[in-house]
Image (cartoon, rainbow, N blue to C red; front, side, top):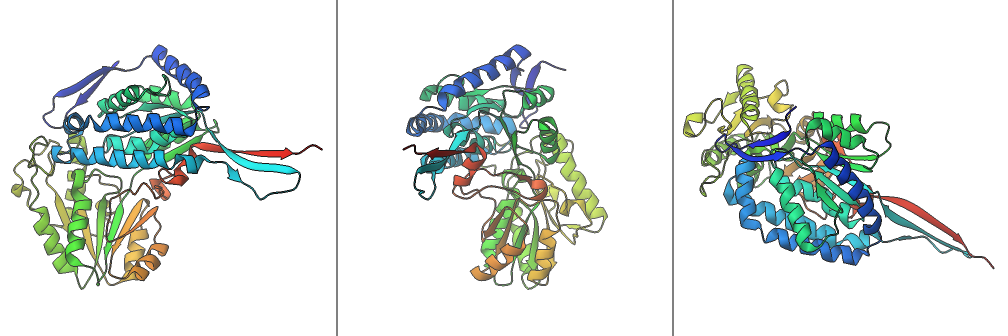
Length: 463
């Protein structure tokens, strides 16, 4: 196995980053340092933790321009959107820092004569965070910032596609004066990642990635009796009711399907439209998709970049070809997108109709710029189709009727339910999934429950 990490840029196929993978000595040192540092950090008052972490956010935001450029080179997102990731990172980080004191406070119990009773939230210890490339800062901050605020030490393993992200975060904490060992990163291969999960020093694993990756994490952690948080894939649906604002539905769902070249766990991958709006919705979607500019993500006018690698694009091309062979109709002419090239990560967006759930493109995660649209007769049919999935991360409805939206949401099996929007994380709300979309919870006050353990104090007063 190679000892060198090489990040191949989807922009031009060049090697953008080279780093040595951590060896056994480096891994052992990191684990030891984390364990030692956490023993001291857990006793640091929450307000002092917050002050340091806020300084780290300030330092990170100050790097905004360079960060956007690096994201484009590492994973292909158009540079015009680089600032959005920094802004989202800041929003989530500052919220989780700000709410920590309340979320971590002792839980009071009703008074009982002769006794003092309360529940204290203790940090778990060393948290191992495994982060993906598609939203490299947004996904990682969900885990590492509240983990540190809760009094844990963190070791971050970022994707080999986005190794500079781990280094930028480390730099930010260094500038802020975080004690050595509380936050570290390691560039790890797959085998050493598994060994880290099995290491006695690791007390919790926070993983964001694919379903097979989540299965690996669970297998590696089996028998250790530690917590595992899994934020996995999605095949997220949108439903357009007959009373929806058509223009808003078109604009929002198209953006939800094609932003980041469709490489989002909570992106829109299937759309169900009431028969009364089906034809105008499809026409509007096709018109809007044809306005995208696919090309070099470093071009400020590009709003659709390459997929992360050629293999990912080929998988989506295969889904589209199989669907068309089974009767689907492709409405976007790839010739309209000159940058689209076979055997490359540059893939034209695609809208499919005449699709059904016998097709892989409607059932298995595409993670690319393709969406299938189906006509439905009403709420019951839409609900049945939305629930016909092994995934359950988010789902959305477009309607003018809030009561109907809540009623439908109660019947859809999903972690987050949207009305008139999609593909967004509100840090005040719990981020969680059902079925193959994972388990556990990040963000909101509830996110702290998974990064701490309850400890009950039962004190009897002596006379």
